[in-house]
Amino acid sequence: MSTDPIHRELDRLAEKTAPQVVAWRRHLHQHPELSNREAGTARLIADHLRSLGLDEVRTGIAGHGVVGVLRGGVPGGRVMALRADIDALPVEDRCGEGFASRVVDADYPGGPFPVSHACGHDCHTAMLMGAATVLAGVRERLPGTVLFVFQPAEEGPPVTERGGARAMLDEGACADPVPTMAFGMHVTPYPKGYVGYRVGNQYGASTLVRIVVTGKQTHGSTPWQGVDPMPAVGAILTGIGQLYRQVSAFDPITVSIGHIEDVGRFNIVGQTVTLWGTIRCAVESDMAEVKRRLATLAEHSAAAYNASAAVEYLQPVPPVHNSAEWVAAGLPTIRRVVGEERTVETGATLGYDDVSEFIARFGGLYVMLGVQDAALDADGHPVPVPGGRGLVTNHNPHFYADDDTLVTGVRLHAHMAYDHLTGSATI
Image 1: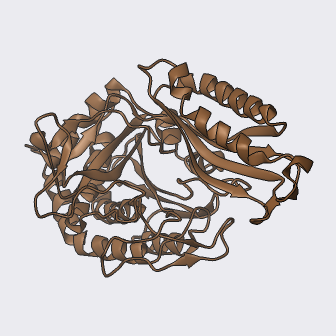
Image 2: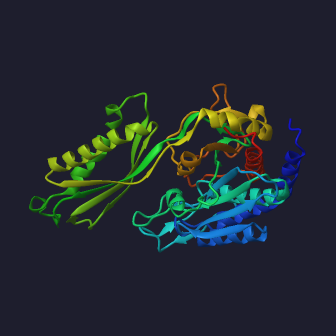
Image 3: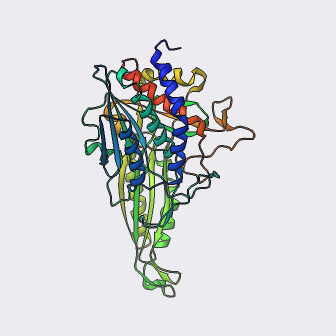
């Protein structure tokens, strides 16, 4: 139990702002925007931060990134960066709520796409907006500076564009002042109000893959007069399923092809087929070997059918690594906010999040916040609660998040920022 009265004040202010946080979340959910297109979202964020009278509100960073700067009224040299991602996904919204998205982006490269916050970034954005409200309310008692970092394009911009965390950092988003800690969280299908953490890689390393298989176009009635790229594509897809056997079984990897494009029609043997996918590695050092083996597989499989394959690796993202020292520094704060019984260690995941760029550069911590109707079984795995809405993974059209849990995220941001600035959550 905290003896610092400001912790109770942070909780009081968080409860006071909770209805507005829910309203923001529902508005954002109903008006999602894809990566590098988050103009309306950024405008909502910036307008709110300006209304709080922050020292600075920087906009237009790496596209639609926004950074609010709050300098406390007490001398202090520490700088906390609180980060939220703001972009949505090209996924249909089937969450079943009245505020479900009906947005379709007709102009996005490769579209038109239905658009939804099927990963929970609407929650992340609303919770950090709420935390800015709370911390601005106690600014005269803050010994240091808080940066509210709202990052676009976490899901990855179109391949012809720059964007995301690395682009924000390259454009000086956190250059003045430089953070002494970065913190954030991701909503997840876990019991409501639980916080999951992991010492080591919370998320894996990732890279986007583009494989272009090229043959020779001809009429469908005379395939011998051309080179059909489709058999080569089939061989590549089959071979990918065996790549996991070519690296250590103790280091999980995945190679997933999520999208295939061809050029032609039903009675044409086309010229090219493009495969889009991702590589995920639990251990970053495995990435180079998996990339080498995938390129060999694609090139040789294509050659076996007299076609060719060109493999490119784009948008690399390092793993989110929580060091033991930073976990130890942050756990007392987490346990105070959500309780000892709701603070649990989790396993690794092969998901990725480019918050890793902030954590790797400045140190800090990234955790999971449970937002679904779940409980933990005897082995610590989440299971659905009878009569609830079930467990639905991120990126699924039916993904949902509990509105009443958002205030927990606001409190986590606010408490972690204050504790870091005062020196109790630091290494």
